[in-house]
Image: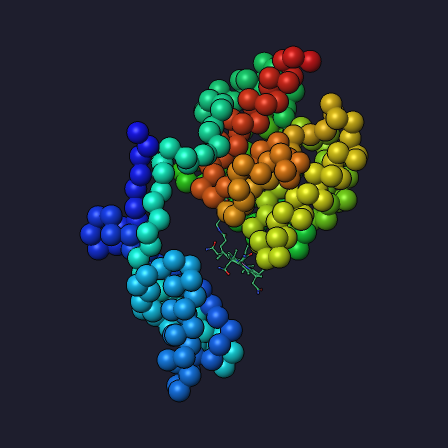
Length: 251
Ligand code: B12
């Protein structure tokens, strides 16, 4: 039997949800009621019934931000939920270092960057910098990992060139800004450039990360793995060891 659940607001299974959005309408003074009517209409069309406009905030004369609370009839079938499972074991830094030493007999080189115009370096630094994230040390802490962190706003040609110069085993790219699908466009450009620049069996492992990626899109974007919000350095190090140490051992 499939497992069905409904959203919950006041009482279990009441179907209540809260959404927020902006409309290009004037929400000030005399125009406020019409703006709220517009928000309620949109929410109704999205299937919220009743739809209660609980917050309205005009932003200048041209835009208004709304929060709407309302009931949906939809059910969630938990049996139909698909997620990308972690298919490798989590290793401590000591275990990861030992596996790299055993399999590669040299240090594993990682080149990281934020590409395009993206200047959000906190995410990639959380993974790479020694101070790490969520109580875990970053990859710089790993004795057998050489980290080259190129920082922000790196162009794809610069990234490819540096990856070649460093003989990178893995290239780690961060994309936080998603406006006009910049994260998808930049990632596709990056993966195409690496495919162009390297023979298939010599290409470094391509890893991208950022809070708004869909983990299931790796194949579509031409990368080996996508990491999303909340990723910790241990997960990334363990994945790299899993992929690269296995490859090194086979070579
Ligand atoms: C800090 C910040 C800034 C700082 C960045 C400073 C810096 N050195 O990084 C400054 C002030 C410079 C900034 C500027 C801008 N920002 Co800003 N910024 C933020 C903010 C508040 C936090 C981001 C952050 O640091 N998160 C913490 C880190 C740890 O989380 P993370 O990035 O998700 O990383 C984790 C995972 O995603 C993953 N991960 C990330 N990258 C990678 C890479 C790899 C390889 C791996 C394995 C994992 C991984 O691991 C990390 C740890 O778990 C967010 C809003 C928010 N609350 O998220 C907006 C936000 C990202 N910014 C935004 C915007 C719009 C901008 C500007 C365009 C604003 C403007 N008009 O000027 C500019 C753009 C500048 C540019 N050229 O990129 C928007 C983006 C909207 C969108 N849809 O794209 C956001 C969402 C705010 C918003 N709600 O509007 N910003």
